[in-house]
Length: 422
Image (cartoon, rainbow, N blue to C red):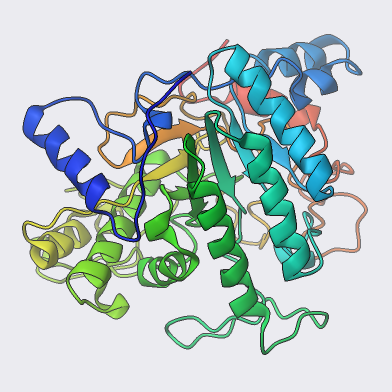
């Protein structure tokens, strides 16, 4: 699918012009890059990992895998040399191009990936990673592609101290405490520069999710990683948070970035999900509840976004936020798992459901797409939940390793989908 080349610069003036033009003319939402315009068709991989899993399954489990394979999902690249990743990426984009569809590619190979948790791994040095990204970019070339750049890459940074002075929990002994954080930002900036230079590639950085970092903290990390040179950020990769909550959180991040970069505001001034006071509720704030769906004017104070919304409206005035984002809706139909005793509530939670189907037609000026970044049906890991294992104590079975097919979870996602499927 041919698209006009999008010229980027460090600021967001081009995106702002598109948004303002859209608002003035009443036309559909524009993506930051026309690769994800509302008419784009996302790629359904005919050789997806879902179909690969189906080959070894029977009965209902096979039917479930084949059903899920009908939806466009992201293709993950997690290892390899610069040469092999170039070949693998090229194969994907060529096949998508032949189908007149846009592939969603996940680059997931940063050093100290997942900080030794279930999805650990990645390149071993800055030089190795930058060479790998260069190979990744060469594989895309001038064809259409969306790149989801390093899930958790900004949420988990080794030996990082946040803008608020909080020390990151991820402190691997193998990483140089003096340089690990700065190297992470250097790697991500190199990746953004390299991928954004491609004429038909949209690249998005990790924005975590509405139940994780506060708005000021993630906005600071995004700016340090080069979000103003990228097409935006992604939220909820491989997680379960409600679309409504992610939408509010994403708009607040975009507003915070505008407040800091265009109006000389401070990250500490950015309204956040952890205290939702603002003009609309007379600055009577509470922490927001992740287990219900947020909305403006909600009678439950812990689900009401109007305080934070009005706070940004007052701060920004006529200045429009312009940083776009995409959401992973693959498994968030039922929202996050509310279980007080389990600190791994993100790991193969019980009774979750598929969320909104993948589309680039979101109706929101800042949301470029709803994507299935995580392949629904694939495991989050063994989910030992602090035990010696090998069973997941919540499920009573030995769960597949991260990325392995998990028939039980695939069935639950289909049964509990919102909207319903069948």
